[in-house]
Image 1 (tube, rainbow, N blue to C red):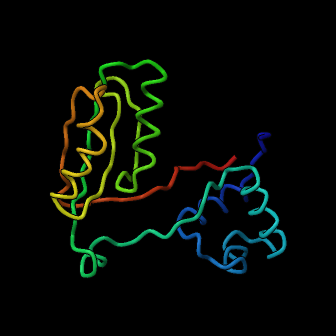
Image 2: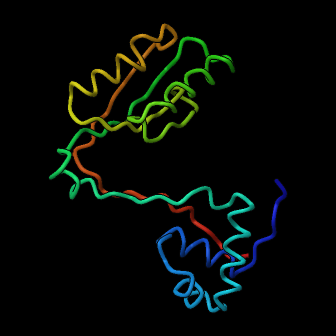
Length: 162
């Protein structure tokens, strides 16, 4: 994939789309002061270049709690016995396939991975630990921190123009 050059309008488009990807093309064009056809062409170019990976709906866990229950969110540190490339990639692939794992980061120094996981309740969390950690002979240490309040949640990358 070739690298593209971004100008100030591209950065404005990316900033606005990070805040609200549901904006109509007309609204987005108005916000960045371009014509709707130009806006559409530029956004398509950004998608085709892979800069816009995907668009998702971010659900409010407090409002969803009435339907799903509050659930548990945990930040989990994982240390492996072996850190060779194959072992690291095998662990990453296994956790990436599990719907309860919302985020996975390979980190250094300290543990090998930090995960953000969500489970409906403690039995579901225990099932997750059995499924992902306990049965893996290469997992040496698991340390979980349970969220009591979400103070900030976002996925925006800080962008600078040009």
